[in-house]
Image (cartoon, rainbow, N blue to C red; front, side):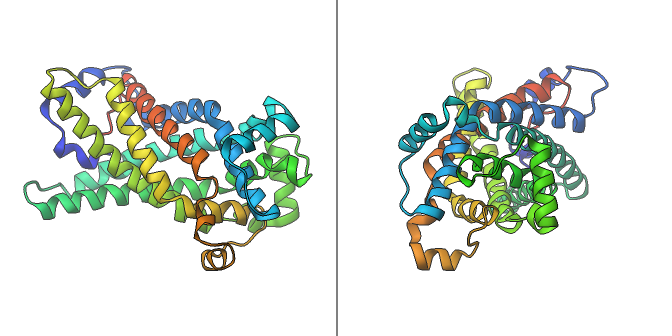
Length: 316
């Protein structure tokens, strides 16, 4: 985020200023929201099969015992429901991811700007570098926590729709699913799994943002050493590295979230005691694959669209 601006080299600043002359009259906040929403929509639509397979693997473990592998689970979905089954819940997923990414990047831009104005960064020693890193993590985590809380009902509906063919419940669409959950379970059902969602998403976004800014800065230095500007491929690699590592580190809360939203146990201690530590990483392969690709695409599209609209790069 903007918290890493002091580490950006002049070349990167020039690059951002050249590209940010795009659409006059578009505020940075608006540009961040549009860029984030667009990136989230594209990545969610393209990568929904990974999310469906992950949810099915976790649900199978909850209801039927040992899980199958990622490819075996995907094969079962295609065999029983056709290829369309891999895109179960895609509407809810697109709504949640597009709105969530847009809101996240909007909050990220606003919070970063306020912090930089009120608490200008000092440079030089390791203590200041550590503080800057902690602040980057906190900004990413806080922005995601706000966005995740606002969109928790859509997350619940997405999970239920991905699992609908196995649960026997029929939903005609996102609004119908929202109505069914709200009318039968009330606010408690609409916000089920919120605690584990925040435990997953806030640390993920904080770690992802911190690692992305570091990785992209390293890629920019590498590009400068080769006498060239940062390319879309550099951004893609930085996003993939950050997304993959952050996803693996924060997968256990995702298992708890899925179980809570499907009516299962949401206790980490009970889960480990009854099923073992390995259960905490059930479904991690498709989720890591999806998130790695998603973050690579999201960061690349965000950087491109935001600067084209007159906003700013995450490092500027």
